[in-house]
Image (tube, rainbow, N blue to C red; front, side, top):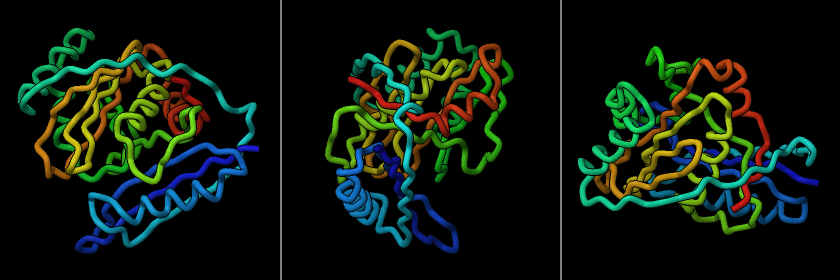
Length: 237
């Protein structure tokens, strides 16, 4: 028997609910209590500040509803400045056939306090997510190999998310900058690989976000969002 466990932490900031962080896991019953404790500890101790509210949600899941996929291949591009990093990202987007890469980058670097991701139609350059303030949150995923989740592993968790996301029929790419002020590495992922770019913002910057590149010719937006939010996925390295 397996359970999906999700944690979300937030705090009140000038009457605004500020997203602090989140994490999740798909675990066997015997690991459930340990995972709950780890996620609670992580929600209460975060580089974005101390949470006022931590929510933990537990759902029993059926193993036959889980799909298993192989993690994207990874590589790293070293840069010295965020400006150099953004130039690299623009070139990578160009190589994917994105006609207006600056539109993607502008959305990415100007995102503030969104819990989820932007879905950008690559043909019309319109945002496709229903809630433009929250975006679409990719959930119900985990690595097959058990790991310590009491502390955030940016690379592993982002690789898991990117692998699930790029398995969606109509998502052809993803760009991301972490909102963690202590983590400046971001990435671009496509159907074949996950490419880390070592600097995409300055240390101490609380802003960050992710943009999914959606091709409407490949699947409907309804199917795509349903897969991102609801499909149970286990990623194998």
